[in-house]
Picture 1 (cartoon, rainbow, N blue to C red):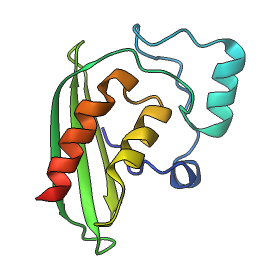
Picture 2: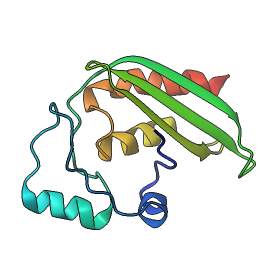
Picture 3: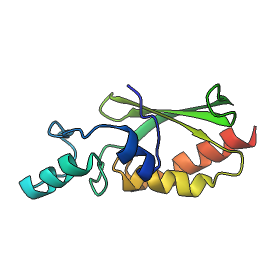
Length: 126
């Protein structure tokens, strides 16, 4: 499972629209109108994740494609699901803005923000 980019403009431009019908049982209920909007935009923007993170794994290495850095985040959720996301970033990327984007797209719960931010900052510092 991979999420190739966490930037909204790249997501909508590169990934074909996906219907997110099978949301987690813990995810807030989405109305039919909201579901149609998600399907049309190809985005989870506005869907709130209710599962919490148990464990975070962060890897950073040179990107073979862009010449920048390749960031891979792996989250073990409290229902045993593993969510893996990756993107190319530069060394001047704002970790707070990256975490806020992940939350805004509904991939992480806002209660996990500080934990993810701390892990990402540690990863970028090395």
